[in-house]
Length: 132
Length: 296
Image (cartoon, rainbow over all chains, first blue to last red; front, side, top):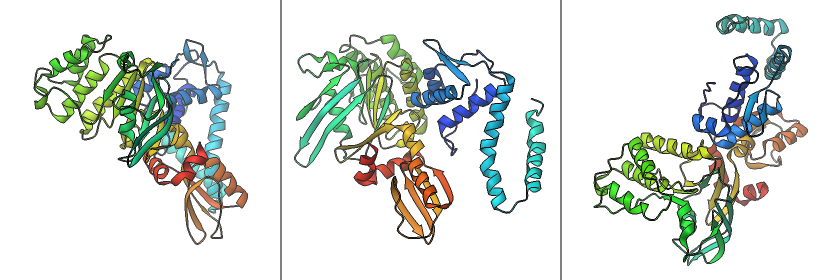
């Protein structure tokens, strides 16, 4: 599991950890049952405080992506592909919602917004392997 | 688990300055940043914890032990690095460490040697010939070789170059990995501990203003800009506020509460901007008592 954290982002370190681990799980890079580094090990490795990692793990646990076993640490939860897709879809909706609303308030038409989505997919989607 | 230290109503009085009463507990496995301007009482607090000066009132316990001057077992649990390092200047680093080792039953020579190698400190040289960076490294070796449960750091990185600073912090991150040790780290350079610290305690003019998990501070403090007609808008959770016409800008220490009220008032174009820990610290320290009290 490789995380890339930066202090130069407006996004807090905790959210960066959550987002990157979530992406690895939803994309299937981290498989069900795989163990995550211990809180202290990840804190040391990433040079962040223990509380930051602890809260990131707790948040992923609440989302149902990981679970803890007493004394054994954290593991990737068993999720059906359908559930993963649904989670990813929900997140997209949450993230894109406000942007679409502000685009509408700035006078964009629905078909123009769709065209922007298509163009983003065309330019960036190909690199990331859209088939997944 | 026994607290790394626990201060109860600790007071130190000087003719023109009073520190405390301080009530502060540090749990093992935690890094507590101690933030305050020069002269706010940070070093005095460190000296009280080490027993270098005597409190006028209150008590402090170190790893469960009372600070009994006749039975200094509690001192064995402490490691200390200050902003000035006191050594026998004409002795080599090696001889200084050997001298220190006699006072600590748990001292480990391999551990000291390992740290020295890693830091690349020339142990054979007389200490007076060492650079500032190497002196601080030597002090950290001396502070960690007996695996203390409590590490007290008093502005340890002041005057160090970025490379030494980062080596120093690396060692601290590793020291914390076991989860059994604790660090009390005083500084006014927030960037040094912005990643390391779990919690921050703010002190000003001898008084503790606020103590909070660092992530809570960065979650709750933010700048909010919005548009609303009117000059005299009263919002809860606000540290500072300014406006030009209907454009307003506030610094909030309770993001959710402020946003909720803005929603009720019908503010438009509400935008949030995150604040770095350095900006937040400045706000807390200059923010007067309303910021501290309303959060405690």
